Image (cartoon, rainbow, N blue to C red; front, side):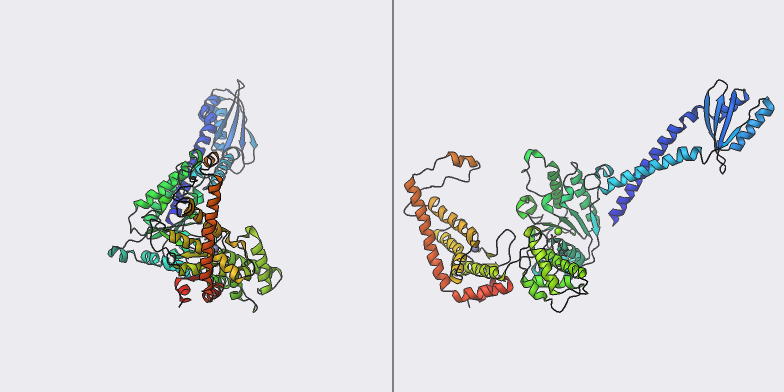
Length: 608
Ligand code: ADP
Ligand code: MG
Ligand code: ZN
């Protein structure tokens, strides 16, 4: 609040100064002639008998007027006078005493002189100045504001006191839990400081667009009841060099005065892209901004009561420097919601919408796998528009169905609707991977199995919990990895008549692993301890083309055969394992169809 007010004041000062400057300029320039020939000069001329003619222009209502003087030497002079009556008196006096005879010729000019010639244009000028400044001001942040702001801009820095809390954020249970300690810290920093606890300075929210990152950040501020400073990374782009950095400085400065508080940097990837990757050094501005941000984050103490939150959907392109300890060392993944989450989100957004009896939110949740919170909100909104158009008093399933087509098939196919069949195939596919992860000794255990589309093109995923950091890959582990990789396709084969293209990524990985075993690690007896790998890690792609393979056709065939043999062998073993766990395969797939995402405990319980 503070900063906005102060900011507006400083801008008003700026206007005022400019206006005054213009006024001074105007007065000095228009009064210049007048200052040559003043009323006293006129009196002198009058008494000296040098005046040939005098015309007095005057408006009826006001005493001020303009004297148009024609001298006997044919020179014209103009004098503005505050009071015409005084002039007439003076002229009459002169007529009497000096014996000259001049008739003042009074022409009644409508609101003449001073008003029309001076004040009106001045006002116009002032208005113009204000308009220009206002336009510049409105553009601030987009780049146009540079002039008006002189780098002191806080135009896009918004401070809010948020009156919402976690109840408005549906689903995202684990995410909210992870942020709980931050809320508690902001509510009562002393408690933590006394115990010497270190609370993270930065929290990075990561996830696809529309999953509720901004919402979550706001709700965190609301939940803790602290001010929320927000600025978007894209605001920093395309600014004068130095402006971005100075904005960051301002932002942190203000925040420090208002701690405890939350600073939220939306779309942080716009500023915090990996440095030094720009061509021709064109990204100086962004780098400066990023550097300033890092400096500020390192600058404030651990428990100053400022939590910097940031959101991105491109964590892969972020500069690793921002993820270092003491910066954004806490990451919260905000994923696409599962069925339960989707139902809760639908409930939140259906609150202010009258629903017909035939609308079943649970059912909508079930058919919208892959939808984000924003997609669901959009879906209900489209449906209410359709209902309003049709003149209905409430939403029916009919509108929901229509909206589904519009939203699902509509823009960018971001949220594709997944059929039950696709979901079933994915559920078996992922369960196949998961069972092998669980059964094989050197891989796994299973952390999560999910059939929620990832947005990166995958229909689901199985995530193991890597138990320990390993220096070496053993031959046994590599073979098991290959078996796990084949598990998805095997499960599909065992259950369905047909197979899908969904395993292409698996096949690629499996092939790469088997190839490395043969050509790089010397795991194949037949080919021996020889490196057949042509160092394809080389920076110059062209070198691969220039180099000939270091071996002949026969060896190439042998390599291919060995790779094939490894994969075939793994395939047989993996198939045998899954066949002996059919019960678990069905159970796991069923559970996945129902819940879309299952954790370690639930999955392992299937094996008891
Ligand atoms: P992001 O910042 O991740 O791109 P937003 O927080 O801007 O997504 O979410 C966009 C909109 O989608 C929100 O304003 C809200 O209406 C809806 N939304 C997203 N996630 C949720 C959620 N978990 N609960 C309720 N509404 C949500
Ligand atoms: Mg957002
Ligand atoms: Zn797979």
